[in-house]
Length: 485
Length: 95
Image (cartoon, rainbow over all chains, first blue to last red; front, top):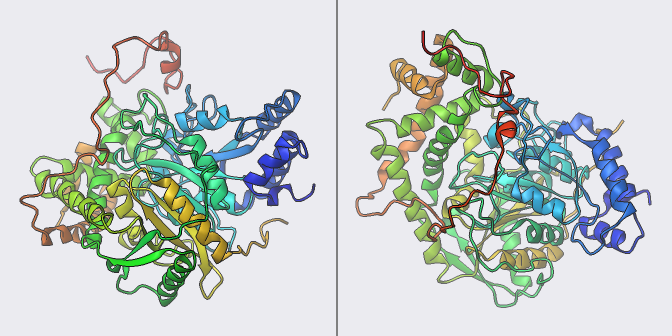
């Protein structure tokens, strides 16, 4: 089969299970395509030789009852992988080789998948364009001048370009959904506490969640089923009854109540986003859903809240990078000098900026004015959602306020970069699940996404709504393989 | 409000990140524009609002106090920047 890399994850699983394809054939195809796609810069670390060996071993004794039998997969370089370098896109972790495995990736390997390599991302997942990575920016397979979104930009680029059948990202303020939207792919941020954070390089611990990034909703549901487990190694992991997301997937969403929040009509939103949203509402109606107007009055305060909470938590989490225990070290005249030089040379500009914001808002005399205030507004934002969910089962919004922007376009203005996450950040602050599905193109032919937000632990419902709408939307990505010479 | 260079120097000291004059000026500009944006929160009255510290509405699970991982010294030391199999090495602290 010459078109192996064009197959969806679900097709590949079926073909391996029915022995039409071997793991070696599939792995070889994705490795070859990845090797031909270096220009995208989607990978930070390649592990192709090991992947091919593992595939060969799998084929010698195939376990075909697993959920991801012999499926090759590259993952975001924020997940610790035992014995394979994990950088978080940072110089400070350039030489870090974990001695343990993250729970989410372990769950994936337990179901038979094979690691191909580690995918590029914004440094410590702080960014919306993958341009803050120490390992360079990533190109969007849609157009070489476009960013792939971020922070999971290597992941979105790799799935969209079919370098990996599926992948995982992490989402603190939109880092799965925004890149999915920019690349015409599907990205799910699960409920906070659904996927273990153990072994994921920490950014903002009360917001971080891992989730699947896929070519379609069915694949996304299958991977979510694998990665979502209760884990005692993460004290915020929640022990709730998880659905068999892929098996219970249905297009029957008749009578589901879907809310349309008026506050998401932001000033200056391009007409094509407004039109996409209207189209989305029509698709949802066509699927039998009932549309209800709702209000989330504190939406406008979500980004300012996020830019206190996330940097505050980051400044605390990143205190561990001191040049002593692991990672990069710069020599200094004394201990303090060594710390200061290590962190100044080891962290990039955006990470330093966020550590400084976080340190400031937590510093003596400012805690109440900023951090405590933000926690209170965070409560109001969550209350908005609680109130809305008395009337509706899910909420439909655009995923982003624009399509993918150009490389370099927003790097000099942090606030304009932050505004990208205006529709995704409230979901993290409230701890809810949200999914972005591709839903149309702008005038340039760049993909646009719609976001469906669910109640806590109601991933099945938003997957079902996405699955039903996906069929009506019938989205086709325009990938021309321009980077393959 | 305005964050001046003195404040930037103070934050950089607290953050253990060294900054020179040029970097301090750039940071002051960036932080001021970010805080202008953050100040929007002052429009809201929040006197009677409980702060949200965790979205997960569960209490911490208790577990029995047992040692589950042993003999990890080599693993813990493995990535240390100055090679030494017994200790982390830092610049001299006590004269």
